[in-house]
Image (cartoon, rainbow, N blue to C red; front, side, top):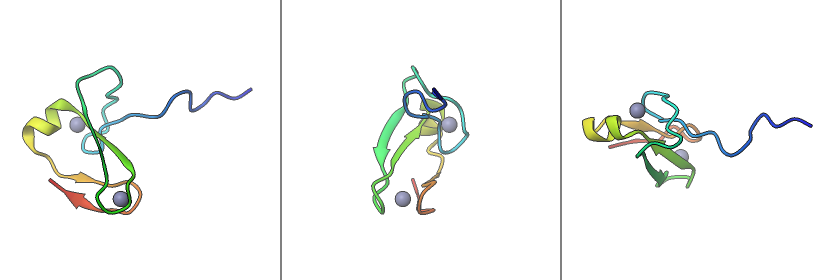
Length: 59
Ligand SMILES: [Zn+2]
Ligand SMILES: [Zn+2]
């Protein structure tokens, strides 16, 4: 059995940090609805995010 993707991959879209178990923000891409995660640090810095699915960028 392959369990490569046990639970969903959760990494910050801005810095790529693994945000599992951290106080990260989760929201959906306003364009395509893909779930996006951003770590608390990037949220604090108001880094731009880019949807991995459609390339939408936003604050
Ligand atoms: Zn981040
Ligand atoms: Zn999107």
